[in-house]
Structures are given as C-alpha cells and as structure tokens.
Image 1 (cartoon, rainbow, N blue to C red):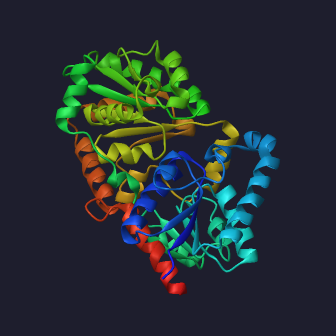
Image 2 (image 1 turned 45 degrees about the vertical axis):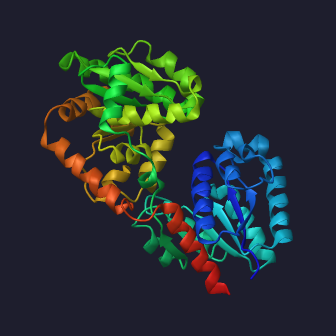
Image 3 (image 1 turned 60 degrees about the horizontal axis):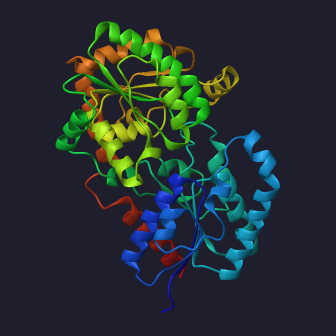
Length: 393
C-alpha cells in the first residue's frame, strides 16, 4: 500500500502548534505518512518542508493586507498548483480562513482531493453564513469546542469535535508556582495577573484601563503585587505602559529568555496568581487550565464595538462561560470596560467569596468538556483525518 500523502497549510503560530500536534498524531497512527505544505518551525520539526515561509501569511486587518494583496494572491495560486501537482490524499487547512479557504476553493475546482479544515468558524458567535460558504469547498471540519459540530452539520458539513489543545499543554505544579513567587520576591502577597493582550492596538488601548483598575484595587488591598506575562511582539510596549502601575509589576519579557524557559515562567505565573485580569480571548482557557479565577475586560474603537454588538448571537464572549454553560466569569466589554467596574470584581475574587469557588468549578467543567483526561487532541484529530480518507477509498 502506498504511503499516505497529506498537504497541510497553517498561517499563524497557533495553527503551527495545531498542525505539529496533528502531524505527531498521524505519525503515531501511520508511520510512513508523507507531509507537504506550508507551516512554521513546529510543523517543520515534525517533518514538513514549507513551500514558503509561513510568516508571509501572518497578516491581519484590511490596512495590513491591501499592500500585500498581490503577493498573497500569487502565493495562493502557487499553493494550488503545488497541491494539484502532488495530488495528496487530503488537503488539511488549519485556521487562517482568508487564505486557506481560497486555496481549498481552487483545489476543489480542479480536483476531487479531500479537503479538511481544522478549527471551525465561530458561527455560534457571529457571521452565521461563514459555514454555508464552506459547503462544496470543505468536506470535513475538525472542531476545538464541543458545541460546534451541530452548527457545521446544519450547514451540510461533516464535523468531529477533537478536543482543544489547551488540555494537552503542561500546567505548573504548586512547587513551581511557589518557586516563581520566591524568585520574584512575591512572598505570600495576593498576586494579580494582568494580561492586556498580544497585539499592539489592544495593549495600547487596554493597558491604561487595567492600570487604573489596579490602582483602585490597591486602595483596598495595599499588599497586592502584579505580574504581567508579555507577548514577545508587544513586550517593549508593555514595559513602557506598566512602569507607573501599582503593585510593583513584574514583567515577564520572553525576549530575554530561551523559548522553553519563557513558556515555563508563564505557566508558573498563571499557577502562582490569585486572580487574573485578562483581555478577551483564548487566554481564558489557559487560566482555566490552572483554575485561576479571572475577570475579562475588552474594549475596541466605537464603530467596531457597535458592529460587533449588533452581529453577536451570544450573551458572553468568554469561552469558560460558554463551555461550562455558566456565566460566572465577569465580563466588562465595550462601554462597560471601565476601571470603576473592573476593580470591584477583582476585589471580590481576591476574597474567599462563593464566586471564586463557582469559577474554579466552572474551570474544572470546562477542561473536562474540552477533553482533559481523554486522548490528546492531536491524536483525536489524526483519527478523524484518517476516517475521512478511509471513507473515500
């Protein structure tokens, strides 16, 4: 029997992580598998030779895309031609729908190659027609969240829930958390983790709000300390914005450490914190994995917020609330993202409050529903891919 040949495309670091885990799972199930496509360092470490650097696809926003549009269209056509030449058993596109789905459309127009898309579009939140647009382009979807398959199936797409990668990521032990506190001189102080985002725009917008909220908290909890794990791309901006924050902030700058050490420091910080103040996003799941109670706050420009409010189909944006089917994580979004609202919620969670207990229980439920204790998501995704291919034989 001929070796399995798969073409994978990732356009962002998060997709590179998913792709690498999937490749590792596929090698476990089918050791002679051959990989082709586009990916970053993690996928390359699993045996992929990238057609071109993945960073060329890591472009977000209309203003950023337009100057590079001609180059992106050229890369799209180059990728379609490469797939048709190789004629793999399946094309697996990983998130990055603006590029990936255009490639899949070109491939489907010229072949019957199976197409699998990893990461379901969040049609449960907004823009419900996105799933309909995938019909005829994508044969099967691999979903990260347990409630997503029915939305895909209603649009006529096959879909498997394969688990969220957060459940397979390591979590710091209590000993490592205590060592972190000792190393940074935190002692037994209440520690607030501040996570104002990973993009320049959101950090610049949220950091002043977070700082003002923390000033109000300090009036009630003068012994508090603040830890800020910064993303590498915005670390310099973060250092400048938090220098006047209360709580003698400890900024974790990943640029000053080897990658493995930076990841371990971040994990230890999450486990050492008493509570977190975080921008909206998947970071809520990283906090949930450590059972760290949290307050979510997010703001954007007024026009974007008005559009989002009108398009939203859900009453919460926090994945812990959605997956656990609770609303225990406080959210302050848009007009409500104000220091006077955020500070009391943080103070409440720092106390031995029933809300703190309820959040920890919701975090446990969330991790269980996302697949903790089951097979690793990479293996589950591999099994789903092989099932799709077998069905076509």
